[in-house]
Structures are given as C-alpha cells and as structure tokens.
Image 1 (cartoon, rainbow, N blue to C red):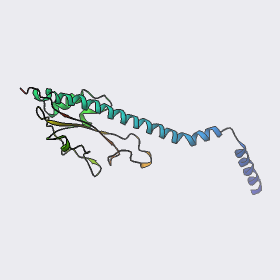
Image 2: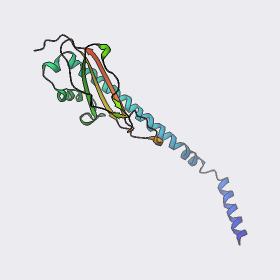
Image 3: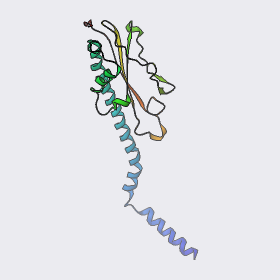
Image 4: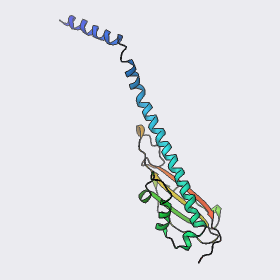
Length: 182
C-alpha cells in the first residue's frame, strides 16, 4: 500500500518539477516585493525633496515681509506671520498643525544659530520665538516641518527623528532694510 502512495507521490513531484507554465508567475513574485518597495521609497524621497523646496520658497517670500518692514509696520505677531507663511505653502504640508516658525534677531551674521533643534531624536520647539527686529537688524527666519514616514521598510528609520519622521528645515538669513518704522 505504501509503495503505491510512494510511486504516486514521486510521479506528482516529477510532474511539478517539469512544469514550466508558472515560472513567470514565480519569478514575478520574487521580484515584485523589492521592486514595489524601491518604487515607494523613491516616491517618498521625492515628496520630501518637493516639500523641502516648497518650504524654501515660503521662507524666502515670508522673510521678505520682515526684511522690507511690512510685518513690523503692520504689527504682526507670531500667529499673523504664520498665517502669511501658510498662504505660501502647498497642500502637501499641513501648515496649521505641522509647521513651526522661528524668527530670531542677532547682532551679527556669525552669531546666527542655524543648527537643527533636535534633542535626543525629538523635535524641540522650546527655544523658538518671534522677534522680527527693526531697521538694520540681522534676522533668521526658519521654517520646520515634520514630514511623516509613510513607509518604514524593515524597521529602517529613514528620517532624522526617532519617530521615523523627517524634519525638513528652510532658512532665510538677511539684514532688514532701512524701512520707515511708523
């Protein structure tokens, strides 16, 4: 009885080994997962770069509002300035809850602090403020956005924060024009 099962099993295995009809499906199954992972990784990297460029453009445009004295003469506070910044970023960035704005004044360009506010892998907003200065002041406008990691492949943290997110920063450093402060 076992001989009959043994010969039937070896016959089935032989047929399976000689079968060529599903090789394309098996090969695609082996290649599909890495290909899809690579494609998603490329798309996520492109979104991070696109978001970074959007923030750079917004930092330059919003910085101009301070450099020309428009923000100061109109009496804007931090929230009004952030509203102006939010009008210059695209829908890819969640401006109201995800964007942080830091505007600081320095006595010289050499003293400007341009380091990322990351402490132990976490984004630290405690030192951020809004000080646009006056005519002739040296000002640093920094915009930060925590870009979420949509795909985390095999536990590999692609971001610079411990949460896996990417902290994107855009900076504009300038000296305010000698505007009439009325």
